[in-house]
Image: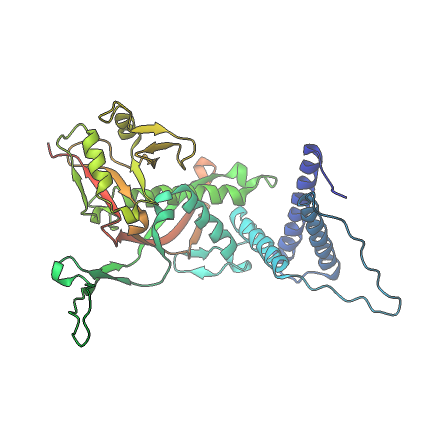
Length: 400
């Protein structure tokens, strides 16, 4: 039969599952703290917890088509075989252990020498499961980075691109005549786009009251704080790198665009010209990026028929559309002013980003002691530049 749960029953099962996982993490953390292997009783308890969690997950995933089948009974003369954990269960157990080790490191009950955190040049390297959560959240918070062409490699990355700017370098297709040679025209591959790696650090402060509260989910709190801090920094560097402090070119390397006639106002015609600067082949995934103030200014623009260009649209990713494309608003974009790049439009696959996933963490326990807080620094490497000028365009205000 189908098995349905009320909201209260489902909530109770979710809470039980979370309590079981917390218990397993506590067992693993205790064994690490005491520098010993898990005892047979602890292993048995963790195995039982694993089975209980698996059963709860299975129950919560039941649907109308699911039918409970009786378990096959073992024959009396057969020895029961030990069930080997699946790959998913192994990953789940590994994640619980790494999460427990990282939590112990943050809370100060263990340092990196006593955990499975390896030592990097700039701090303790976060376990892969925790690093992946931070990276995913950074991408979720920063659509520009998420939509870019991402490269996760060490060292310098050189990106070749095809140059067919001159008509004589275009690849040609023509009617052929038997026994007659085709004219050969081919552009030149160039390799002038390079991405290195600039070290950056994100510093967040965490309340000691939260760290000392064993009931508080300190790991997810640090993930949220670190991801938000990193995402805001990266977005600023991509959209509006400010010299002389910047090292990343980001979209400042973009040359394709339109210059407004005014330093203080944008016209509907200029928005349409900017839209058409991106070839139709790249329009399907295009979005607009601008500041809140620029979006407000565009809300007042109308076309020749008196229709507003910018519209609220709940079906688009960001809730607003301009000429049928989503509008993403960022506080990191410059507001309307002389010589500022105030709007970007296009498919941001044309922006190449290199973001290292080897995040290093340091916990500063004394620096903010007078604030009853600890500092958590996350070090990472990044670089970015435009790799395809045809995919993105910018609107630049006139010089004053």
